[in-house]
Length: 290
Image 1 (spheres, rainbow, N blue to C red):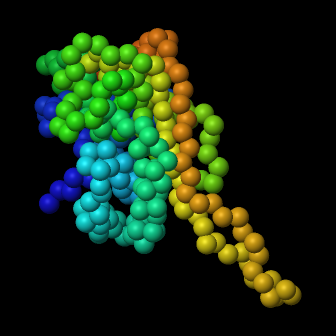
Image 2 (image 1 turned 30 degrees about the horizontal axis):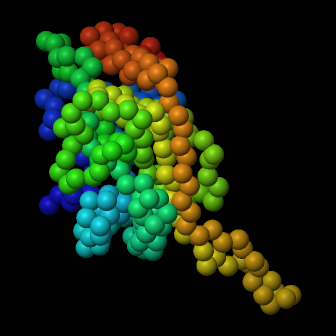
Image 3 (image 1 turned 120 degrees about the vertical axis):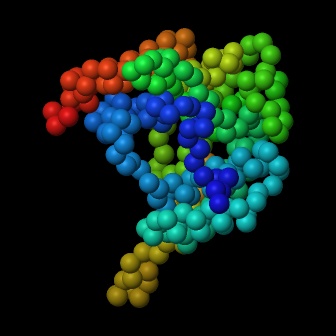
């Protein structure tokens, strides 16, 4: 039985042969071109889950459920841990169970309850190139953690596509879990492109954002003990790193919108070339083996 926390890829919204460029893969087109094409067009397996990704899903769910219901369903999350651990023995359920309640609670108390989103976990999809006899439609899409629309409060079951008119000065938000003890001071490039893609998708619904925001929440690295000193018969002092929430907000401009729309459409046209002119695949993917 499927769990509500399972990844949703939107395939039921597309026809057989259609292709979706995911928001999280946009940066990979630039930074890891070969991998981008091998996963998207050759069907090679990509990321299949880890302790970190399962933990991230649960912390995201903590925030989502708090916004939707004011509480959290621990039974559903425990079932999800069991499910993912049974699929991949390398996933450490003990670490996940130790961390997710602490991280999720910290995220809610330090950020979510003071910055309630208007919409959460919306899957958005936009057709870039219509289907032809040679290929299916080419889309861009993905699920965004949340968006703050001024004057609009969260209502269960409501969707941003139902909003009348246009809205401005919105904030795209995304939660990121991290095991790092030092966090960046600016939004990393890959995350920036991902959030700009969500901003682009929302703009197609008449919802215009002027800010993007990453909310980091770190693991609770406390209780660590240093090496034992035989001379002093004492353990060394090790710095402790309790769970931290760090918010990074950056302005976006019309130039950013133009850039991401142009990049998305370049990728879509490259996919069409891959399909219609296979002799160009090695050039497109930067791999002579193709």
